[in-house]
Length: 68
Image (tube, rainbow, N blue to C red; front, top):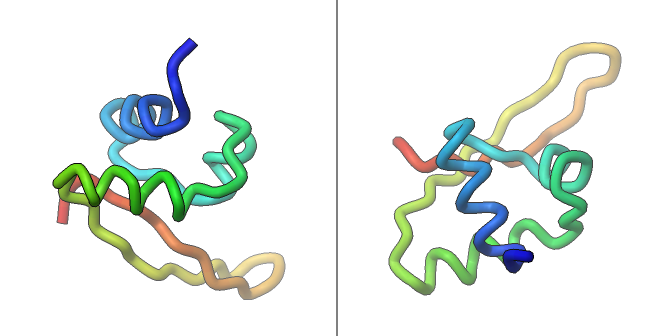
């Protein structure tokens, strides 16, 4: 079984981006920001974007991306 950093990296390699909701529902990871910080400390270039959903409720969310 791989660790959570490996799971996040694999997910991002396959899909390009990951959100905290996707990390929780697809991988069972509750502290995505911590895993992203650990990857960034290993010089993995990860970009952070803010998005807003419009329906049904307006919510802000973070999207982590391997590509700018």
